[in-house]
Length: 204
Image 1 (cartoon, one colour):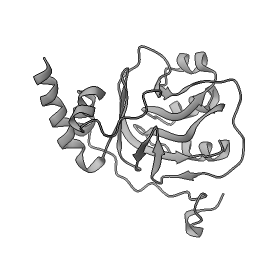
Image 2: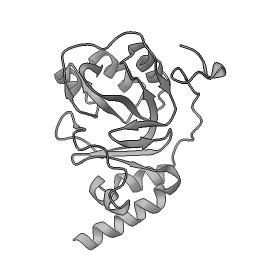
Image 3: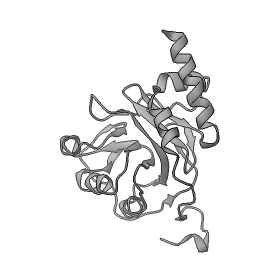
């Protein structure tokens, strides 16, 4: 795989450039559900409802997106992205909804957890579901399969991606809970969190 210095579309691996969100912003987003955030965004930025928690109950996941696109699976690209995770990140894998192979298994999940990720969102499937559940890693995906993905292939890291029908930019805030997953644009996150809180009060 090439480095960003060669800038070849489909093979880009960009360095991390987004800053860690403030603890106050993370706490504000953790305090509201995805349904209220969806209302605050007028139903925009909600991922396809087929992308759901692998295990229930699930903790609410909040964190900045570390994005990876793997149109043909590419285990080597997914592994490279995992090694770029910083504590609190949400690994977001754009796998084009593939149901033929897994984008995450228990070994990669253990590495994701060791890197300190807040969770994983996958437009695709996983395997080793029971083992992943025992690890305690929060995973949101389309389903379960038995087959491993291809080891090699194209892919991009830390670029804008499409996941579950929504554009996700590196550093956007992902919020996921038992209702599903929403993408909160980073530059509007504080205002949207405050709006969602007010909407939740009005709904009581």
